[in-house]
Length: 294
Length: 159
Ligand SMILES: Cc1cc2nc3c(=O)[nH]c(=O)nc-3n(C[C@H](O)[C@H](O)[C@H](O)COP(=O)(O)OP(=O)(O)OC[C@H]3O[C@@H](n4cnc5c(N)ncnc54)[C@H](O)[C@@H]3O)c2cc1C
Ligand code: FES
Ligand code: FES
Image 1 (cartoon, rainbow over the protein chains, first blue to last red):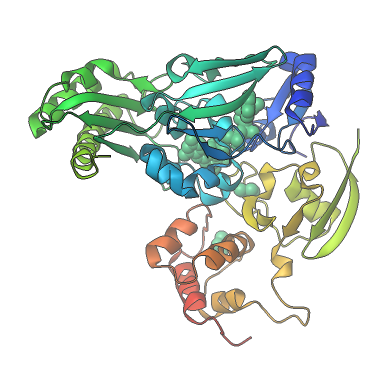
Image 2: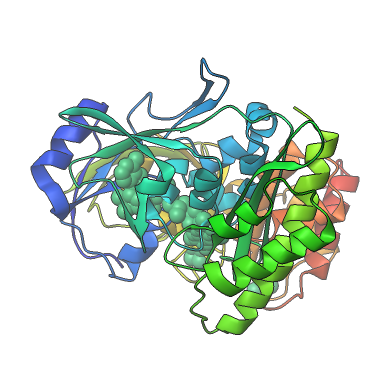
C-alpha cells in the first residue's frame, strides 16, 4: 500500500460534502478525478487525514449552454467529456483545441475540469484557457456561493482562491466573441507529457480586418497562467502582419514571461519556444478570425 | 476503518472489506488474485495498470478500491472466452509480434478495447495517439501498431 492511512467519506450531496469540508478544514482533501491527488499521495507528498470523495454526488458534472450564449460546466465534468462535446468545439473552440493536449486518454477519462483548475499546475492547459477566455469560477460553501474571475482565481504556484471549507462547483465560459480566432499550441517532449512551454492566443478583428483585441496567455513560463498584456496590447489597432506578430512575440518572450528552466529545458530554450509558439499561435488565430467570422 | 466493496469484475461479483488506502490495482492483484493487471510506476505514467471502469479505460493505480464499489470492471482476464480462446485483438498481437516480454500488454489491450469500439477503422496516427499513454520498453511500438491495424482490418480474425 503506497498512500499513508486516511479516512474516507463519499457523500451523495454537495451539502453533505460542504459540511464535511467545513468540519475537517485543511486536514481533509477533496477527491475529484484523483489524477493529481492520488499520485501525490502515492509518493506521500500529501498525507490528508480524510478524503472527501466528490464522485458520488450527482449534479456536479455536466455541460450546459448559458442564457448569454456561453458554456457552464460542473466542476466534476470529466476532461474526456469536455473534449468530446460538440458545443465546446462550437462555442469555446480554444478549450476544444487544448483538451487533447492534456495528458493521455486514460487520464482524461477520470480527470475533471475542476480538479485541474484547483490543482493549478503552472504547466496545465486548463487554467491558461480559463484566463484567456475570462472564465468565471463559482465556489460553494455552507455560507453560499461566490463568483471569481479567472485572473483573480489563480493566485500563484498551485494556489487558487478556494478555502478549505469551499468546493469549486462550476466554471463558466462567456459567449465566444464574434470575428475571433484562436490557437492553443505547446511543445512537450512526448505526447501527453506536461509541456515545456505553451501559449493560448485569441484575436478579435474589427470590420476593417485590424486587431481590435488580443490575448496571449502562457503555460509553464511563470507561477501560473502568464497573461502577457503588453505584448497583446501591441497588436491593438494593427493589421496582424508577420512584422506585428513578430514584435508581439519578441516582447512577450523578452519581458513578460518568467521561465525558470528545468531538467528538460533551460530558461533560454523556454524563451525561444515562447517566441516561436507565439508566432505560430497568432498566425493561426489571425487566419481563423478571417475565415470563421462568428 | 474498513469499507465494504461490492463490485463486478469480468462479469463476476465480488465482495471484500478494504482499507481506504488500498489502491484499486493492488485490490485487483492481491485481493482478487487477478494478476494480469500489471503495476509499473504507480503514478499514472506507464499505463501497465489500465483496466476498464464502467467500460472506460482508466489507470487502476490512480483509483482507490473503495471507489469501485458498485461499479463494473474489466481486466485482461476477461478478454478470452470461457473456452480459453483468445480475443481477436489478442490473436492480432500474437500474429503481428505485438509483444515481447508482455509486461505492458494487458494495459495496452485494455486501452485498445474501448478505442476500437469507438473507432472501428482508425488510421495510424489515431492508433499512435490512442497508445500514447502506454509505455513499452521492448517492442519499439511498431509491431503494436501493426497488431492494431491487423485487428481492425480483420474483424473476424479466426479464433
Ligand atoms: C501521467 C499524467 C500526465 C498528466 N499530464 C497532464 C498535462 O499534460 N496537463 C495537465 O493539465 N494535467 C496533466 N495531468 C493532470 C490531470 O489533468 C489531472 O486530472 C488534473 O490535474 C487534476 O484533476 P483531477 O480531477 O484528477 O483532480 P484531483 O487529483 O482529484 O484533485 C486535484 C486537487 O484539486 C482539489 N479539487 C479537486 N476538485 C475540487 C473541487 N471541485 N473543489 C475544490 N477542490 C478540488 C483536490 O482536493 C486536489 O487538491 C497529468 C496527470 C498524469 C497522471
Ligand atoms: S502503474 Fe498505473 S500507470 Fe503505471
Ligand atoms: S513487451 Fe515488454 S514492455 Fe512492452
